[in-house]
Length: 601
Image 1: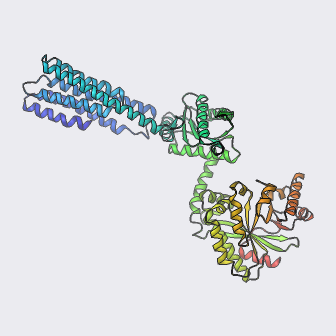
Image 2: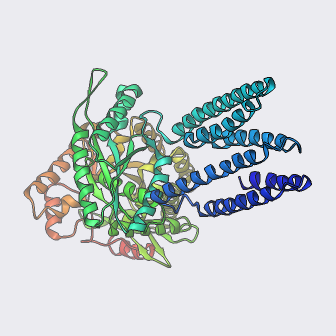
C-alpha cells in the first residue's frame, strides 16, 4: 500500500506542476506520507508469535482504520482533480479512482468489513461525477461505472467465499468440524502471550481414547469415525465457556481452559473438568446398533507465559497422558517437576546411547546359575552401560529408552554377538556350561532381520565349533500379545538348536494355553514371588503351582532372585533344580565369573 500510494502520488505532483496546480497535490502527498509512516509502524509492530489475542485485535482495528484513511485519501484526490477538465487532469483522476477501487477489491477481499465500504466509497463518487455531467455519454459512463462496481463486488465476494472456505479447511478437522492441531498450536501461542502479560495461568488437557484401535479393527472405520464425532459432541456439551477444543489427530483431543490468577486455581479447575469428562466419556455409545464402551486417559499440563513454545506444553501433556496409559488407563495425570527431570534425563541418555556401542560403553556381566549340588551349571548374560559423563547407568533406565527409540535392535545384536564370542572363548579355556541365557527384547524379537541376524551369528561362532553349551533366549510373557507369527519365528530359531525360556513367569499373560502352544523349553520364576516366600502364604502357593506346571509340561525351571537360605530350602523341598540370585553371586565381570566357575564347578 505504501508503494501503491507514494509512487502514483509523485505523478500527481509532477503533472500538477506542469499545469501549475501542484500545491494541492503537495499537501495531499504529505498526508499520504504520514499515513505511510503509520502503516510502516504497524507493519513492523506485527509479530504473530509474540502478540496476544488482545494485541492482535487492537492491531487489526488500527490497521483497518489505516486502510479506510488510505482509500479515503484517493477519494479526496479524485474530488480535487476531477473538475480540472481544461488541463485534462480529470482523466488522471478518473483513472486513479478506477485503479484504487480495483486495488481495494483485489487486496482487501479477505475482509468484508474493509472491501465493501471502501469499494463503494470509491465507485459512488465516480458515478455521481458522471451523472453530474448531464449528457448522454455521462449517463452511459455512470452506468458503466455501476456495472464495473458490481463486477468488483462480485469478484471480491467470490474470492472472499473461496478464501473463507480454504481457511476453514486449513484450521478445522475434516471429520469432526472442530479446530485442528495447526490452529490450536497458533491459538495456544497467543494464549501464552496473554498469560505472560497478565501473569496468569491456564491448563491443557490432552485426551486419548482408550482401546479406540480395537473399535476400528473390530467394528470398522465407519463406526470409529461416528464414535469420534459423538465424543466431540459430548466434549463440547460438557466443557466450560472460554474453552478451546481441538483434535490433534487420530483419537487424541486437546482442551485449553480459561485464565486463572493463581496456579492452584488452574490445577483445581483442570482436575474438576478432567474427572467430569472421564465420567461422561465412559457412558455407553449406541452407533449403528452397536453398543460401544470406551474410556479415556487424560494428561494435564499447567501452562503459563514462561514456556518456550506452545509445542512444549503439548509435549508435557502428552507425556503425562502416557503416564496414565502405563498405570492402567482411565485416569488423570499432571505433568510435574519430577516428570520433567525424568524426561530431560531420558533425552540426555537417548543422545548418549546412540554412540554407546561405538565407544564400547556397553559391556556384559554374567550371573551364575547353580544346580542342587551348588555347582555352576549355567549363566545369564546381562547388559551394563558405563558412560564417562553419567557413570554407571542401570538397565532399567537405558533398556526402556533403547526399546522406545529402536536402538534395542542394534544393542541386542551386539549383546548376542558378544555372548557368542564369550562361549567360544570359554570353550577354549575349558569352561563348559550347560546353559547360557540371553535376554531378548520383544522389539528386537519382532524385527524383520532378527532370524537372519541370529542365524548369521550362530553360523559364524557356534555352528562349526565343538560347543556343548545350550543357548537359551529369554523372552517375557508379553510375547503372547504379539500375534500368531511368534511361533513361526521361535521355530526358526529353535532349528538352530537355541532354546527358549519364559522370563518373569507369573507376572503377565500367564496361561496354560500359551505354554502349550508356544515352543517353550524353560520357565523362570519371577524374583518378586521368591522375595515374598517368607512373607505371604499365597506366594508359597504360587511358586509351588509354577513348579507343578513346569513338571506337567516337562519344562526346565529356574528360580531367580534367591537371596536367603530359607528361600533356597523351600525351593529345594518343592523340586526346583536351578537357582540364581545374590545368595550365590551378583552379576560378575567376565574374568570374575571365570574365577567363580573354577571355584564352584
